[in-house]
Image 1 (cartoon, rainbow, N blue to C red):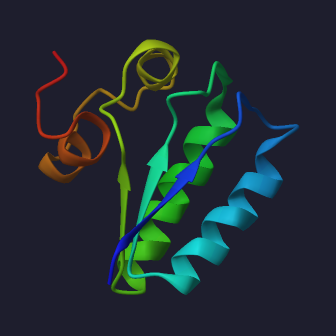
Image 2 (cartoon, rainbow, N blue to C red; image 1 turned 90 degrees about the horizontal axis):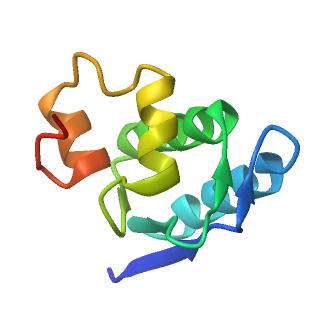
Length: 104
């Protein structure tokens, strides 16, 4: 099955992330693999990270995959750092967020 891609809006915050979360869930249900493109996302917060993390777990539990189209950088990397997501990373976290490259 082909990998589907889903682009994020420019703002993913607690006020806007709900509809994106629903899109992610629908795409995971319809495909075997989903790739999130966060390159256009200029503003995001912890709510966005929580949705992405939960979607990653949900996809795994369903036997599907969720990936990022690009390693975390810019705003996404900054929010990951501030939220503590980059401390004590598992190998799977490094693969997911940073495409296998150690972020340190």
